[in-house]
Image (cartoon, rainbow, N blue to C red; front, side, top):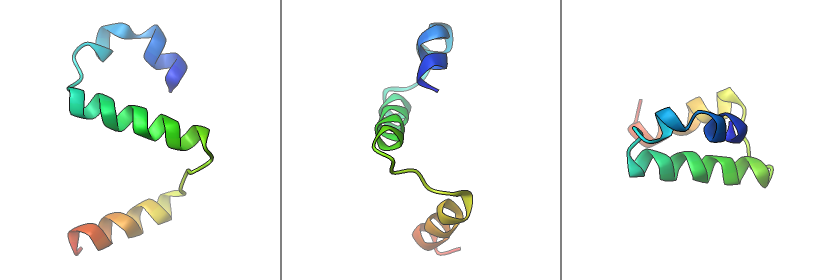
Length: 51
């Protein structure tokens, strides 16, 4: 993702600052090994939004 981000600056300029922050936080988490599998993500979203 980070490599694509650097290569495709054309789309990066159209992303909101809030989304840029979220993307960079996600990249930092991945670099720290703090990734989650899809089922964990779904569980977290369901809990957050009471789904």
